[in-house]
Length: 354
Image (tube, rainbow, N blue to C red; front, top):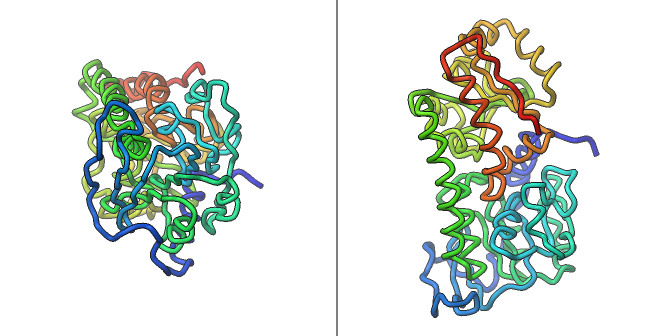
């Protein structure tokens, strides 16, 4: 199957939300909203159960420590691995990685076999194949799961769907990690992991005070110009580093993770820094700079662009933006952003060595 862009994959998944009927309510769950406190002591994972987690379709109770976890959420496997468990099944998004586990997370597999990789081509999770894995927990935190899909999956295991307070595919990596930590009986450990990554953001901001005085935006040349909104993980990387996103970004994007913009709105790209996720670092960049509107923007004239190859390990890690991939990204992205935002047009924004 030809390799599509990250934007096209997510657009296909969101389109399926509109095409699939919304039907029955999942068995074994209620319509109460907020998370309820963990029961029992915090001394061990088993002491945390039963635990109830609220989400877009009500709430789900997990009665005991899960042993066979399937991740339907496209990036949920990283949080599971970071918390010391290996899923029996993952859902492919990026492609090219055994078990859908990237190099930033591979060492977390230990001696365990790689997870079985499932696919979602835009029509929803592969329910029968998921059932065959005999899961006792299904995680769909970073997802666009529909109510009918949730109902189908809930027939054979507790399902933790996406949080209702965020757009589909819009849950922040912090919340994702903490929700999955709660589901796995490792809430305190999840909070510690989140704090460790937040410390890395803080260190980068302290070392680069200019970031907090600059604006930035993330885009990709998918079907014209596709700009990512404030709830997309890629944009959250920039805001986490102190950059301010365009003030009317979400007004243009709407309640989606991103959207194509017209030529008349290419001004959204004229920020302190424009981060481009591109298919390649040669022809794609040349094509962008041939655009008669975009090439005249100051962000181009003053060399304030950062280019990330979409299909590289670096590009894949940017798209995932998880508790495991973010440190890998910051080591590479921060030097590029520093070069692009130093106020010196002659400064070359290089590429990471690996």
